[in-house]
Image (cartoon, rainbow, N blue to C red; front, side, top):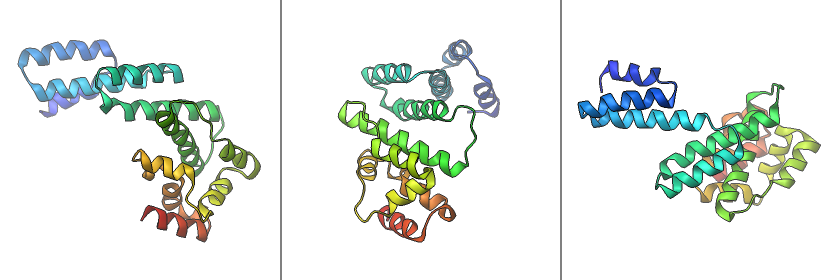
Length: 186
């Protein structure tokens, strides 16, 4: 693709603009350009999902149309929506936001595996009682690998776990938590 084509793709902001450019690209028979426009179209559609139900419906449609490649982006959008709802107008340190992202990610991964909506009740209770980073520190310090880590690992998301957050922000956690995180992540 040319630099001009990349600029055109990056300038796309609506599905209608994508469709318009797609017609031109198809007439040019430029498959790389067509694929890049389609990818941008998918990104725009996913970024416009505003509710959990919309994300869930979009994911079902993507699966029905054999577009599993979209599921990770839909999953991230769903997590971001949950996070925005939780945070409201409050500002938290980045480490705490990352921890919350893991909790929501676990809940969504668990839902994908079981087909049921399951809240991370013990984790949320610990967050309420101890604060976010302290709760995560206590969870990671456990000698036994947690169900959350196991679930995330089973869907290929162990790099989106509390252990990964501990390794990314080591100064926010205890020595024991850092050692356990390092051990679990290998």
